[in-house]
Each structure stands twice: as C-alpha cells, then as structure tokens.
Length: 112
Ligand SMILES: [Zn+2]
Ligand SMILES: [Zn+2]
Ligand SMILES: [Zn+2]
Ligand SMILES: [Zn+2]
Image 1: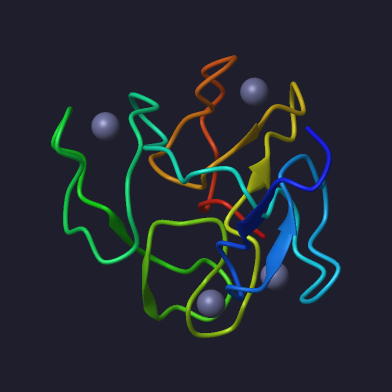
Image 2: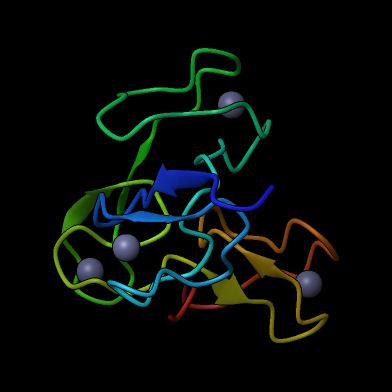
C-alpha cells in the first residue's frame, strides 16, 4: 500500500504504515499498536489495567525505579522496557521473577 500513512505511536508524526523505524523519532515499530504483555490484547497508553486479562499496566522501571505505564519505553528515562533472559535469550517485558519462555528464575530481578 503505497502512500498509506499512520501516526507514529511514539511521536505522532505520520510515517509509512509498514515502516520498521520512525524516521522522526527513531523508535521501532511506529505503527504497531501496544499489546498486553500477558494476553496480547490491544492496550492504550493511560489504561490502568488490561481489559481482557486484568493485568495491571504499570511497573517500576528496572533502570530508573520510577513507576511507568507498561508500554515499550519507560515514561521517565526512556529505557526500552524489554529484557533478555540470560539463559534462553527470550526478549520479554521485565515482569515477574521467572523467564516466560524457559522458566528460569531471574536472581535479583531483571536488568535493562
Ligand atoms: Zn516517531
Ligand atoms: Zn491482558
Ligand atoms: Zn525508567
Ligand atoms: Zn529464558
């Protein structure tokens, strides 16, 4: 679809629908909608909890320690809220005490 543009979900500038990176703010997947990390239902910035599974859409950023909406990036320090499991390498939201993929216990919490 040539010429079909959507607003970037990070900065709001119009970008190609299939762009992998926003040319304006440089953040990834500018036109994907946010999804609940647990059930993958669409969620929106500002929601307090997932309407589908009830997961609380708030977390303490592992980098700066401030509470942030559970989106892709910390609202305070801009860190990407994704961590890699040290055992299997699966990327995931740094929530809970275990890897969602291989069930390894993450000692001392996730680092991002
Ligand atoms: Zn952008
Ligand atoms: Zn959910
Ligand atoms: Zn932060
Ligand atoms: Zn793992």
